[in-house]
Length: 152
Image (cartoon, rainbow, N blue to C red; front, side, top):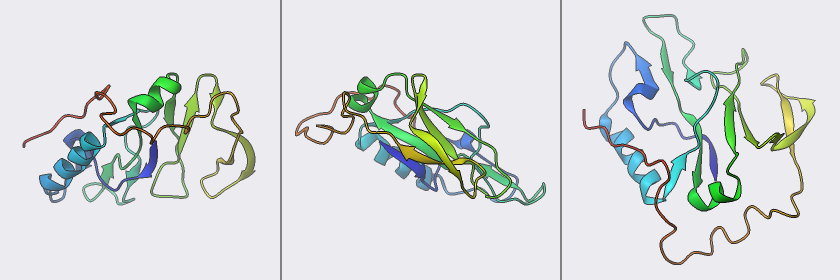
């Protein structure tokens, strides 16, 4: 599982700007790496874009740069996993929260710069999520939700 700011989008609709267009090869290369690693985007709930340059239109740019990428093996172990985008007034990036089932990844502890709470990771004894995840020598398996390549 990889989660955070990838500084790139997976599709054209994840980047909105009235200013100059970005080169397609950047997005295409990112899509290729995600596919080569046999990962897929976990999706999200909340506001679509996770980054904004904080300029006023027509100079504003919004993009979904932050995401959670997982493998089929990871998803098989945590099929209820989901990502939530939160709003913030203190950063140009929205904070993400990884959830699984009815429990969150962590417990609320103390306030941080995002106005959310610091995540304290719970110990997971019965489900050793990471155990064996990188032991595969052959194919990991097909991509559950493959990314698409946009040739525009």
